[in-house]
Amino acid sequence: MNKSIPETEVYFIKLGSKGGWEEECLKQNILKVGFKEADHQLCQQGKWENIFQESFCQKRKPQTITDFQRQIKIFYESGPEVLWITFYRDRLWWCYSEKQVTRLSDGNKIRPVIGQWKDTDIEGKSLTFDRLSGKLLKVRGYRQTICVVESALALRAINAQISPEAEIARATINQLKQEIAGLVKHLHWKDFELLVDLILTRAGWQRIRELGKTEKSLDLEVISPVLGELGMVQVKSQSSKREFEEYWNKFNQSKSFSRFFYIVHTPDKTLEQIPKHDKLRLLMAEDVAELAINSGLTEWILKKCP
Image (cartoon, rainbow, N blue to C red):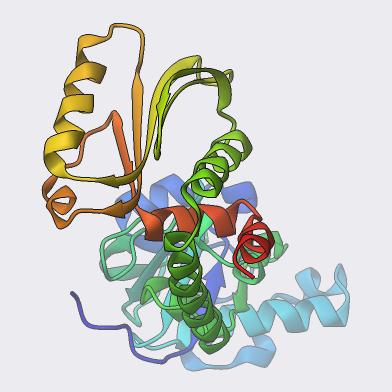
């Protein structure tokens, strides 16, 4: 695992009007702003009160001029330890930048990125929007060029961390899963079969028919209307790897089914040796507990285990 990004200031930068410079900046590994009317030499000298031409200031409100001065000052004075972020193609991108501003011939200003823009966290996972907090994504709506970002939000995303509150909640959920798994193992086998049926139904699978039923064993044929797939479901009170292989061969001999669910109440340790397969969902008590919680069936289980 790579080292965590240390605590630092974080700024969001909008790369051009409506993101017009995003692709250019990410490919060339630069930061780019407009502010053409800002005098480059005065900015380098830190004379922020006088950087804009008088004619430019006359056309704008004093607060707007102050905002522009604040942003261009950040762009020129931020050191290489400052973290910059932006959003492009449904991902968060981040980088550090050299404290070296160049004025282009058209008046725009650029800073070189140290290394390159990155769109992954320190574990190499893409920083897609579905993995980012709403508070952090809200920054996308900023209408000007540069703004301060709550550093904890950005750094937690990049460092693949969660908030202390979320850590506590996750530990609580994990504890709940363990407790529910214990209850699942004590369900009567008929209740266990019913629980499996409820979970599959809430996941979008519809029972077509029972393929066969013996004591403490149930075969189901289910269909997913959305995916257009047929699934074979085997619910067992107890089972071993050897018994599983018999059903697995049966499944593979069939040309109708595209999914095989093998769900075991109290598995033999040999089942842990079964390799993963795209068409196989091997579910044991812990897996069933998690699915039950996600399906809103916790209360149902509690009533079955008074």
